[in-house]
Length: 275
Image (tube, rainbow, N blue to C red; front, top):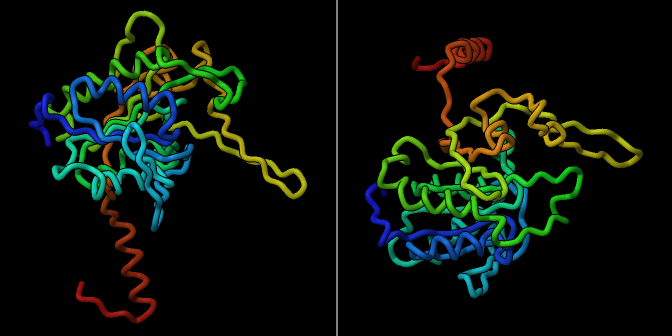
């Protein structure tokens, strides 16, 4: 996949905000300027669905491509298996998501990132692009964004889509998690980052209900941001574009202590092994 020519570039474009969202339209129009783009996206908002997969989904023709009554993972599986041209796409792009996807804890929760992870299992490189929107307590669903707000996301995603394959970036990364600030005049610089390790989920009970709280977003003040240099959260809050090169599937480490525990289990249960 690393030698794809931009003039012949085949891109599968999806998202988790739904096929009628402003972000996917903005990316579609930009990527179509230099690539053959096939859109396969959820018919409705599927935010925070992770890598949920369906056994069967309905598909509809849409002016941008295909809409599925399913998840972003469904869209990638269907797009790479049943809805794209005879040649497998060179690249999957997911986004642009309205709202950032920052930190290790969102990697399995975000539908946008999960689409990129799904592509990795097909051995297709992917870019997941999300936009950090400071909301000051306003629900993100009530924030009305215009196409021009996605200018920063369009610039960097287009650049990476055109250049990263030929540069060999995906010889070392399965996908790129890209987070951008809102467009604000001059283009923002890019920082290669690692996902923040911050995790501040908690819950409280109120009668027969449990209220879940994600308190990470309460500490996004640039003056007091607790995340160290080099993390995705710090880069975006300080106005830089965060690009985290990530791998999937996740690898495991051989663990000698677990081997000893396994041997102890065999011995305690009278199990004979060849080892």
